[in-house]
Length: 331
Ligand SMILES: Cc1ncc(C[n+]2csc(CCOP(=O)(O)OP(=O)(O)O)c2C)c(N)n1
Image (cartoon, rainbow, N blue to C red; front, side, top):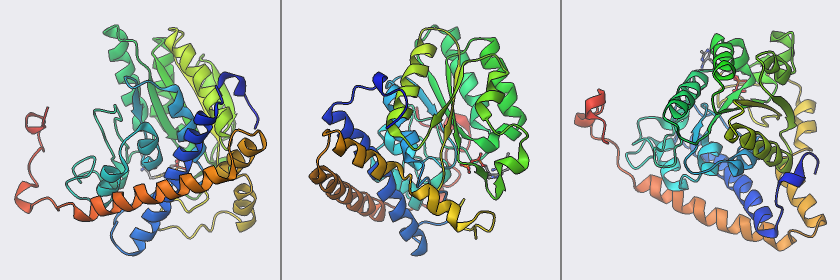
């Protein structure tokens, strides 16, 4: 592995955890794709397959009191943040036992207790929310970090620039985490931006900024720990650009005519899961049997999550207008 792995305490237990988190995300999403074909899951569905190292690595640097703001490609972030798989799957189904009571679906997974403050269907929409949360923490003297995930497509939005500027100007505790998978739907980054190194663009707002190999979970964790420590010291926001790739289509409706199959295959050779598992085995931190044991326990967890979602109820039609105004929202 490459990167700043001296910051990461690579015990055997820690390696097992990193691998388990990535495998949980991968198998959960493969199951979602299958359930989508069977029309158990409907509407939009954006899979994170290929990008797992980013969520699995960055979450290691966060504390329970920190906040997480994500995008519509957020199932993996929710799982890595510690949401139970059952309510996440039930939310995909739109059932009342879902994390957002079935009202959010795939793009709006939310858990107040875990301070997972939501997926967001709006490109760039999470950035000002993260800045507002961090401003509130700073004004109230709370020692917490807000981690904000977004795709490189957000760079084309004014919100990106406004958010970076204000966070840097007011030295707010935000960890900006750009998941640069090189495509915003069907638009390649180099067809839409004159500067394709997003961390350089971010640096112009006068905040520390780094580019990281997003397919290397150890490098991701190392960079996230370093960045989070800087934010916690009161140095203001930190920006990380993770170079990553989605192996699947943008969503379930996408013929992928904008990229060559060879390019996808080439990135798959750098799949973060076998890459880490093989490296950890060579370093004698993991054994071949560990992978099998993790796969078996994830299959069991997944089967329980699907059963939980299947057993969930649909919201009664007469309740649909409940919680529409703030005073009806449960505390
Ligand atoms: C404000 C806004 N404009 C357009 C869209 C339509 N849209 C949905 S996803 C997407 C691409 C975003 O790409 P990126 O931010 O790189 O994230 P990725 O999907 O690659 O994870 C666009 C343009 C939207 N949801 N919100």
